[in-house]
Structures are given as C-alpha cells and as structure tokens.
Length: 164
Image 1 (tube, one colour):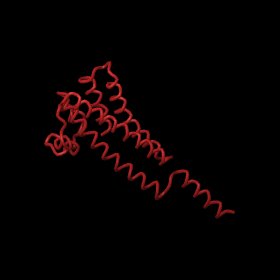
Image 2 (tube, helix red, strand yellow):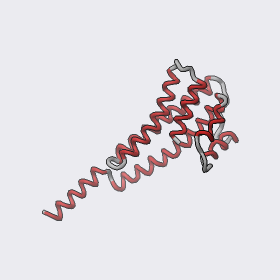
Image 3 (cartoon, helix red, strand yellow):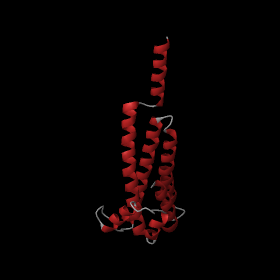
Image 4 (spheres, helix red, strand yellow):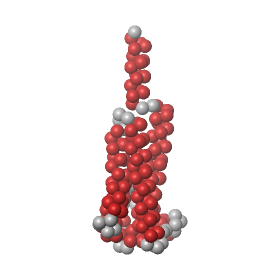
C-alpha cells in the first residue's frame, strides 16, 4: 500500500502541484519517508524490535503528514472532501480487495485534482490502519518476548548458570 501511495503521490504532484512550491517537495518526501521507513523497519526486525517499532512509527507519522497535505489541498481550493461513508470512498476502499490490484487500478482516479486527492486520502487511511495494526502487534511482541538484546542476554545468563 505504501508503494502505491508513493507512486500515486509522485504522479499527483506532477499533475496538480506547482513544481517550484515547497508543498511539491514536502508531499513527495512524506510519501517516500512512509514507504522507506516501513522497508527499513522490516529489515531491522531481525536484530532490533525496538528499531522496527520506531521506524514503523516514523512511517506512520510521515503518512499522517501527507494526509494533512491532501486535506489542505482540498480545503484551500474549496473542493469536496469525501466522507468515509460516501460511495466514492467505498469504491476506492473496495479496490484493495481485488486480486489484480496495482497502480493501474487507481490511475483513472488521477484525472482531476479533487478525485485524485480524495482517492489518495482513502489509500493513506487504509495504509495507516494497517500500520496501526502492525505497531500494536510489534509492541505486544516486544512486551511479551523482549528485544534481541534482552533475549541474547537471557541466553548468555542461562548458559553461565548451567556451566559455572
């Protein structure tokens, strides 16, 4: 999902945001940060649950910043913001459940700025929902099992207790 948000944000910015504006760069960087920090967190998971949680939270915060940028875009241009229960939002949410979901599944929603911003808001909400679930799971695991350093210490302590 975060890759879709990033790719579609890049396209959105090219089409609807002045290349020279600070917003252009901020939106692309927030989308990129969301995607990259998820990837970095996953890589860190083998050695540091704490780092994985931290980077996943950074990704979540970056996507929240991006969400606000899209909401600002709509508000400042006096464009309609879809409600969660609107048919348009439901249609976008349902695309996540299609088997052949890809960039092209969402590309037709980039035809006008209002639809594009709303579509991306829906995707960011979906991505944030998944990240919230992931953060809760990671936090629970960390509390129950500890991190890599704690497990290593306990193994070393158990070895010493048995051998000395």
